[in-house]
Image 1 (cartoon, rainbow, N blue to C red):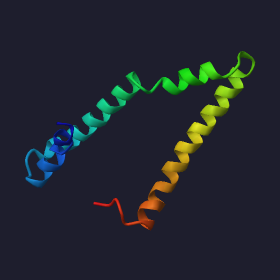
Image 2 (image 1 turned 30 degrees about the vertical axis):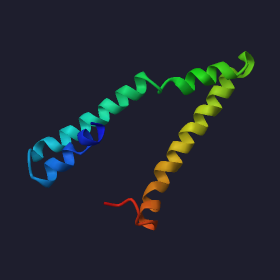
Image 3 (image 1 turned 180 degrees about the vertical axis):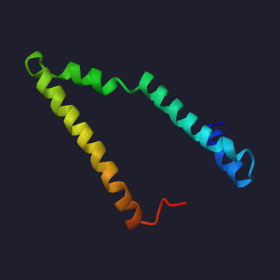
Image 4 (image 1 turned 135 degrees about the vertical axis):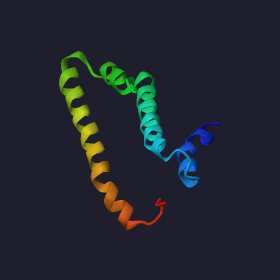
Length: 92
C-alpha cells in the first residue's frame, strides 16, 4: 500500500494525468511526513538528552548536543551535491 501511494505522483507524471496536482501531492506528502515524525519520534532525542545529563551540566550538555546535531545536519547538506556528482548511483 505504501509503495503504491509513493508512486502516485510519478505515475501521474508518466501518463500526463493531472500534471498540475503533482507538486501539491509532493508538498502534501512532505508535510504529512514532518507532522507524523514530530508527533512520534521527533521528541525522543530531547527527552533522552534531558534524562542522561546531571542537573548541574544539563544546560551546557544540551547546548553542546544541539550544536553537534545542527553541525552534522549542515555537513550532510553541504556535502550532498558533491557526493551526487562524484557518484552516479542514486540518480534517476
